[in-house]
Amino acid sequence: MSSLLTDSDVTGEVKIIWLEDIETLEYVRQAVHGSPYRVGKPPFDGLGRLVGYAELSRTVTRDPETSLFRRRVFYLVPHDRDSAPNGDYRTGSPGEAVDPRTVGARRVGEKTERSQRRAIAPAPAGA
Image 1 (cartoon, rainbow, N blue to C red):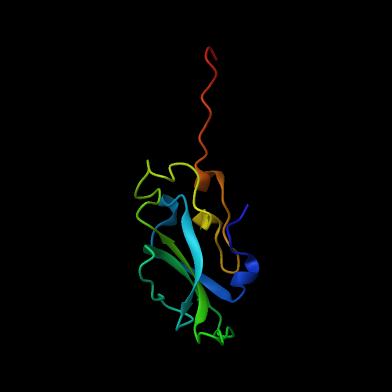
Image 2: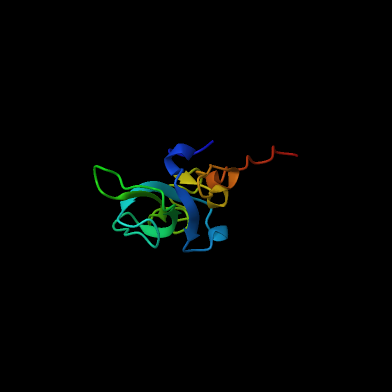
């Protein structure tokens, strides 16, 4: 099961840069945003906390309509599980969220049991 992006959306990537330890994050949100540069930390305002981003190959060209490079970013918002463990996403995750351990350059992440934090059914009485 994957998020809203497909591998064809990320073909120009060469590297994923993480700004935080992904072992402590059960999920991150991923999206493609416009950036004036192929590499380096992209501008990121208003959506939440940037936790990672993709760097692009030198062969990737700018979007002709915006003159920006389309780069993937990974982020969290204040009501995500890492900041609000008992909030809306105590189980499950947003549609664009993936387990960061499944992310790679040119490979979108996937939802996993870890990212979904599936509730374990209680044992039957007397078991």
